[in-house]
Length: 389
Image (cartoon, rainbow, N blue to C red; front, top):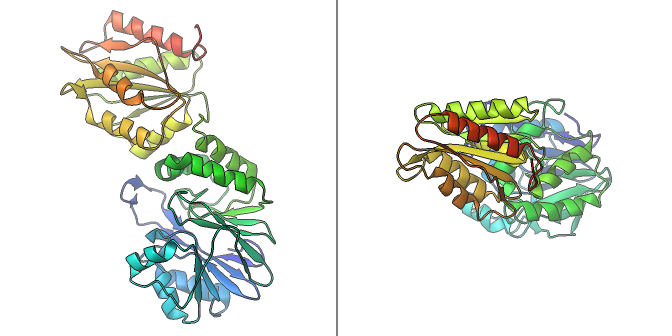
């Protein structure tokens, strides 16, 4: 695939991995993106994951016409992007690695070699002249590792964005981007919102015509849509005013309450997404919580605490900087319900949280009283946050 007359895609598709990074389901696969830049001097942008080196090198040889690349540019040292370094450097003994100085110790740790006689260390504002185009380097520490360095082709406006703007899945750009990109962002990058904002400020000053990430499709159309979403996500602002109901249920009664509550909200015209945390993809639940403006948590009291999948979920939100949302609670307990208190305490340290005044308590199962409380909570959430119904 050609990005333009000088830049060709040489990455690979992974349709075999079930869990990316050992925790994120990828039923639609994932790509490991690499690019060949054909100038007076040639460069390869990043490599691929272990097990895909052979097909990637074949892609490179076809794109280059068998020419040895002058440079291998390493933006990011995670092994899903760097495992081909050894193979390339052995295949092409004259190739020089270009990367941030922080990359080389990691290279030594991962692969036992850091190529002291075949490397160029670059920092923020440095550039690499390939003759027909010029790459300008932008350091982006903690988006989402400390060595991350983006490259901008100032000739054609192509931004090589490392893991920023990545997405799970292998479908082309015309497929749905936002959902899997959000799941990728909030799972992997989400904790580092302030660093992403700094990067976006830098990108705003560039004339970007295409974004080439290390996962997912090359983005050429409506660049503002992607940077706009990243701006919201990095600012921890909700993408929509939907209500996400996350629940766990032991014997089905809490599930019934969550479903009844969701139906009441939908009848009032609200967008509702629901998930059973014991059965759903946890990374999707985390993404839904960040994308929606209101979070409703429903769970049972369990060993004087909360049901384990709910604790895992809230902990995952906190680890990723969850904030600036309205939250409400539905609790269940046969003799000493206290899960609402525990959940609120867990979220109370998250900045900018607003908690609903109404709490719904089930004593084992729904009753007329608890259904009335659920209706009161639905009416409260359908009013303006912080205001009267």
